[in-house]
Length: 200
Ligand SMILES: [Cu+2]
Image (cartoon, rainbow, N blue to C red; front, side):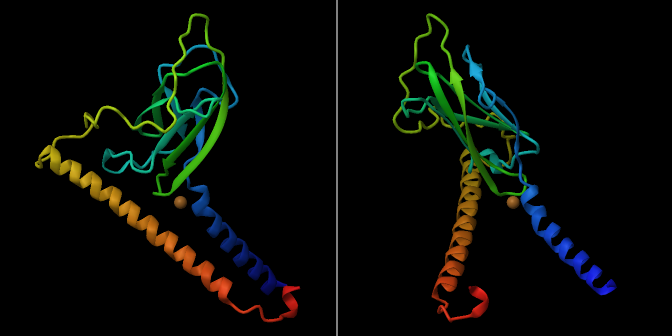
């Protein structure tokens, strides 16, 4: 009796332990526009706020994305996004009225990427001149002004290098992770399907 209770406790702890990393990921707690909401005027900025600080290494926005996709499948965001604490913002000039989709991706405080999407309805005010949208996600027109980056001993090009290096590190980490997952999947696939009674 006592032994099995202990076993249960250990098993329960293991389950909780496994679940913990997933629950540590940032999740969206507020947004402009709201999920399934209706916009009747163009907001100053589109915003997604999460429950925790976002991880914007080197202020490079690496791993972050913010897209406003129209009913015509075109992209209406300007391609520039700002990460500030738990929030990410972008500006967008919407087109014709209809159902739009917000596609977002952020880097959690623990370094993992989280993405999701939601829809909202755009009811353009009278006299609104709709934007035409872009068939490909636009890139930010102004090369990162780096206004938030504190000047260091290095030159501007040096700090740019370090941001690129950070992005490369993240990219390499992602590749290693993907490689590991693929390797495991291949190993599982290769295992001969030995007739084992407990698999049926
Ligand atoms: Cu994680």
